[in-house]
Image 1 (spheres, rainbow, N blue to C red):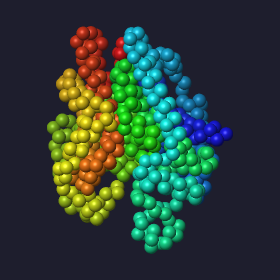
Image 2: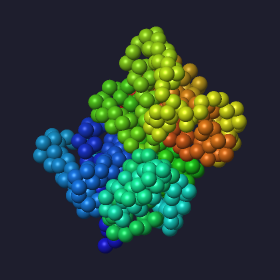
Image 3: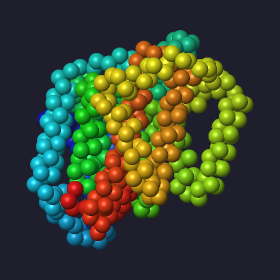
Image 4: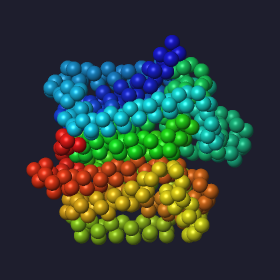
Length: 479
């Protein structure tokens, strides 16, 4: 019975997100099943904590049955819409949808990489279930809240140490970061409430579910962007096999994997919307972008990166450049006159202590170019960026939106570790790896777009009747 409830707790977020997205994504969309269930899993993992906050706000106990009832009601409503109001449209069979006509060598490669991914997910699941809560930040910043809320049966407030002392601990609790967003601890409460007791291993199963959702969403959006089956599978394998990504599942407890998956999901949907102008892609982009601040404080700044991306997509060339310059000047002006003691998303100017820290540059370079955190992705990206843009020619504008967002994010990343007190996180190789995890999945998707464009142009030279570029609507059957 215990394992049955654990599986139900994992199935509810997937069904909740998948069924509602299934109502929005039209049949015949390339990679539709992966799009629906990958993004659905990620969305469900974000909606369940929202429902738990609603349950607590209504004064109801923070138990599994109460939240599950709300979630199952939404699932039932989606099923009713699907079977009684939404018109039924014929969809391709499973073999046709997932296994197009490929050369035998391509089929073998896709099957081999799919098997490697499945084996890796299985071994990560075993590692996760057999290891108790281990990482330092997980025990000091995140699971503290989960344990208190699980035992109390409600979301009791966490305050700063000084305030906790003033109140003598009456009705409040404290830890190292009481102001952190509460989505991640609530997921741990959700899993423990399903089991009925505190379990430091099984409560981390949402991290494995998040990785599965990220991989499926990545594959589905790659196919929707026009990438072939082989390209989408290869880059999905690249992403899911990265050492630091796997580490954040095996040593679960941090929120960075969730934020990286959420930001990547927003970027992928935004890119495909910018090319194809599909409303459901726009809706997913808005949802995941707005959810970023609910996961970590840094998510607020990644949300801001969509402002220059929207400018580039919606405003013609020279006007966009002029508007971006104005936005940059406005940002500098805000920093100059902003109250130094006022905190925004957990950061104030006094706390950041802005000035250049030259010693952090070597640490950042080592994380990407020397250490094994990301395999050889930094070398692949630095080669794919110019080659992909040059090969795409005028069609490179299809990637301008995601390029603007990720360029802004990388600029903020460098400012954080080169100009603020967080530079020590680069010097001692601590926070820089975790923060980079929030950006790398999106960078992998951009690299996939560039490589897909390069391969498509190479094919067009040899077979002019089958053009393809990054962001096109259809993928060639031979990839």
